[in-house]
Length: 449
Image 1 (cartoon, rainbow, N blue to C red):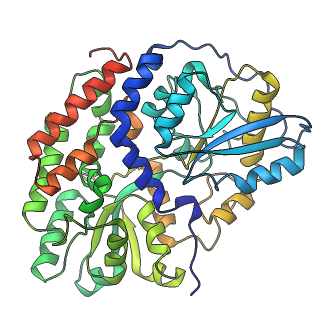
Image 2 (image 1 turned 135 degrees about the horizontal axis):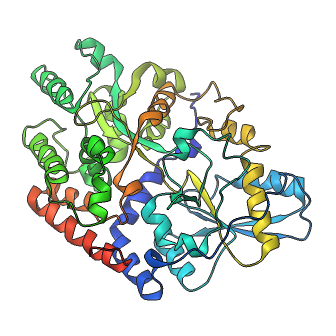
Image 3 (image 1 turned 90 degrees about the vertical axis):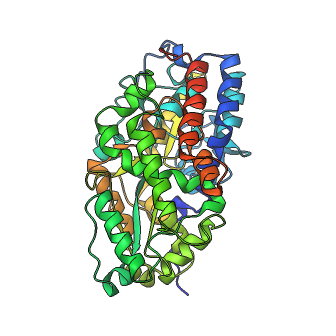
């Protein structure tokens, strides 16, 4: 069977990243005891220059940190960069949970030259980006990078600290085209229309949604897509300053709607034990019509079938409370940060590697990763699944997720998983998540907490 790989979107990535949020409270509190990333002042004035992609770097040695799930992503780029420049780059895999491990090392002064990193507000703050990372403003690849991708993250207070190497994931609805066609369903244009569609499918004996409650990390997507318009209207800025909360009308309202969907029976009967792999199979086989998920679901489905079947069977559409506004969520496979080590030669070489990756090496990279190009002048390979291209198009009008815009990430997904299991009520989910958020915000020195 000719299967199309999606190595840039490998199945375990979002699972691992989301599971890492379960340790975020402990990690953030531990890091806060060593430093206060929320209150650091900028000590880096920015790169003095951006070297050419293939300038000679004989004798320069760089260290590149990556997670177990992302360590292979830079391998071929690094190999080509070494051959072109004479530099030596060692890719070091940091054991899971990656984020917590990196934060602990960095807090004690153990810095690499580069690292794969989730380019969100909370994760950049967790590194103390303003003190520990090189600003990347004015990079030669900035103007060539898709503006919607750059807008999805990587900055703090107007300065860029992360370079995107691939498009961020998008939350939305992945659906079985054949099930929709057989039941006369058209693509819903809002969350209310989505619920109407789901009820219609249920009445015809079709399972509307598949939820993987046995691996609770994805439970948050059905809540977060409902918050897109509120996020665009400043929801997370208000939450960040304690002017709004997870028990407020927007977030608690979305949690309540999700709970009502469960009570109404709009999900699979085995929702409490359902897995990520089973979700992918159920959608491919038409045993469920839809799944509210992020882009990693597509890579799981791609691993279970061939490219032609995937393109003929699976589609994507964004949804939000009032319309079709997409929600973006970059993860650590999408971006790279360069550390301010104090060694200018290595710092310059790290910037050069980013330039090489996003210029000379980028065409080979997207072909190898079989993913959408984010650099102008580099075409997206014809082998990239149609649904991935469709999802990527929605980035232009997307809004950031909780992970992207909140200053800290509480265990919303875990608390929702408890709700699915029946051990928490919807109200308890909102209250406990707010309590966790306040603790995290206080730990990083956020004002208002």
